[in-house]
Length: 376
Image (cartoon, rainbow, N blue to C red; front, side, top):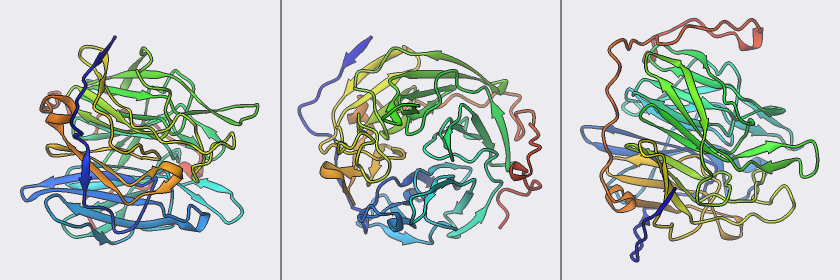
């Protein structure tokens, strides 16, 4: 079922731009009593070359007139990372590096940023390093990473990180084809993701996967996810769109219907064109609806930020595969026609260790000893 919410006035407007153009950057937002700050980590600069992959990081305190550069993310620059904020810290997961010969490597890195001190620290690495994964926060306590690319192929794994215990667990894997560059978020107890790219044995090697899925997280055992296929959404199948959860709805914006690596040229050799579609899926009514479109089509996103009462999309690629410094924002009430509803409360049995641990015997996947997640 589709519902159309149309608007004559453009509700997506420009915000202060990034100091430099960047795309494929991980984004997150953090709030305290003083306000909300939006972050941009890693990505690719305007050269779109292997040596243009950056580890630079920036922050924008909403209400200020400009972004500020902060300490870079530790380690090498990387693409297709993802970021989430929990418990007053911001966590950056994975991504991949690109060498001069074109070889790529998925990294297991988990880096934690403390907005108050401006310092970085390393956390327990991902058991299965992935990039181009979907991430989301459940119950202000656990971070889920869904599918993604691991060095040579996509994986079906759903990996769950507890930032308070600094531990990883495995949850019910996705039942559909594994993908990278898919788009999604968590609304309440529901994971929603769409599309992405599957790996083919034929040419082109990578092809869009037109699919939509929802996963119901069991509040009494978050490792258990009940997956069901959804009706196809109202836009073409998309790659590297932006997404955010707003109450009981997951919103999607931009992206492209022609998958590519990192330079914006499709795997089929045709330059990819960004889209301006915006639409949402309501997890309570199980309906899709169209929403007011972006003013400027854009693609190559790693997330859309819900920052207080507004949605924010940072950087990306615009027409002609141009890496942009643009930042666009929309008030939640104008974008979706209502204020976000609160997330459900934590289950009574919730503790910082919700899921039975899973042991990994491969030495390269061994986890370090537990440490205080907020110690420096």
